Every structure is written in structure tokens, then in C-alpha cells.
Image (tube, rainbow, N blue to C red; front, top):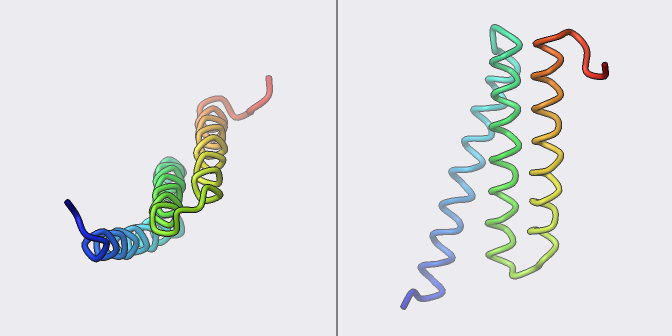
Amino acid sequence: MMSATVVSIALAAAQIMLAIAMAIVAARIFTGPRAQDRILALDNLYVNAMLLLITFGIGSGRIVYFEAALVIGMLGFVATVSLAKFLMRGEVIE
């Protein structure tokens, strides 16, 4: 069985790596040469934010983090589809 120490170290390491990944992706959003690169970086950013909230939820045992991650996942998906449609056609609502 895993001890609480191993789980807490693993969660801390995962949170640090996700924060570093979010910083790298944020830099890509600001420096991306094309709009497609920025949209992919934004998609990656919301997935990393969702995973970071899940690790907070696992560490604290509170349900609110999982609910927030679910909301971020749904809104992020809709935002990605809307931005992709905007890039393809030039308008979101037809």
C-alpha cells in the first residue's frame, strides 16, 4: 500500500510540473506566430488547469475542486470549438 507521504510527494510533484507546463503554454499563447498555435496553446492551458484542480481536489479531499474542473472542461471545449469555427469561416453564429 502507498503511504500518505508518497501520495503527498507525488501530488506536489504533479502540481509543480503542471504549473511549469502552464507557464510554458502561457508563453506560447503570447508568442505564437499564428492564431492556430495560440488556440492550441489555449486548449492545452485549460486542460492543464483542469488537471491542476483535480490534483488539488485529490490532495484536499474537497469536492468543489472536481466540480470546478468539470466546469473548466466543458467551457474549454466549447471555447475551442468556437475559436476553431471562427478561424475556419470567419464567424461563429450563422
